Image 1 (cartoon, rainbow, N blue to C red):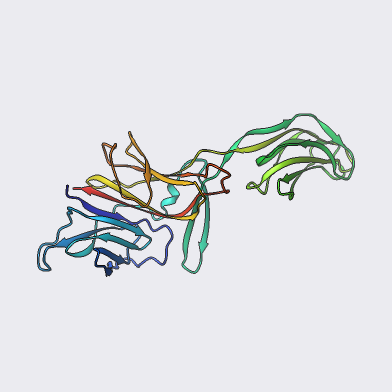
Image 2 (cartoon, helix red, strand yellow; image 1 turned 90 degrees about the horizontal axis):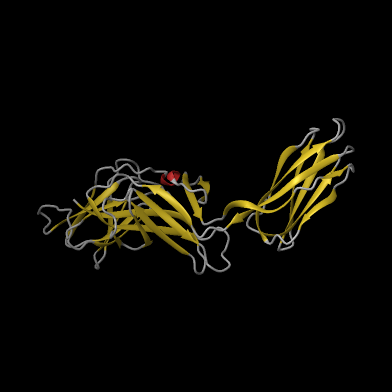
Length: 338
């Protein structure tokens, strides 16, 4: 089966992208048939052409092309005989390809590297906000100008996102009533969040936990009246639910010909013992799952070309590290028959 290579290079972590109009420069051809070229532009497709003689016709069909990889601006492919690299028709990949991610549990952190004027994207496994871990609707009041302990949530022993309650006060003079929520972590550290209210009727307030990666042991709630009667009630603690995986979904451009193989190379940022990073492709009807990264995978189940690429991050099954596994760049290549 003859195949044609189209190496679609997604330049996610830019290392100083080549200027428009630059042609690929072949920088190495090793004895084992590994061809390397540089100046690969983001969003540009490339094909490797070969000939049986230097003066012969150049072809782009292959009988045994293999070992293709691409990271940023460097692409490698195993080729026979004589070779050259030529740009192929533009296939419309988005430079900011990660902007097409979807899924509420795909956490994203963006940093700017001013020395390269480039961007680094971090995608990592993470939990999503769930329902309440604990609640107490009892109304308490306090007229003291100092904080008094009014409620405790003991034996939380979980990741906490936030606490919500309602506050009000008597009168309109003097300081407003304030509520302080103390998060006591399993490592014995403490962080607090404070909200105040001046209205003589109940208003909702939210107290965000500033250390969502830490296990919360217990929560203390304090109330201060501010020389008037202050009131608080309807306390609810919201935690996280650990998902079995985090999925990053990327839209693919329209792919040429009949795609037979795919390859997703990733550059990990953090890994943990026992975690997994896989990918799957989807053609609008069928999904091809459990595909290995950094490995050329043959398409078996799809009847048409894939339209979506999904990267799936699985945490370690035992005591997983927070926000792990994480990746910061990827490149996607595919093989097709004309």
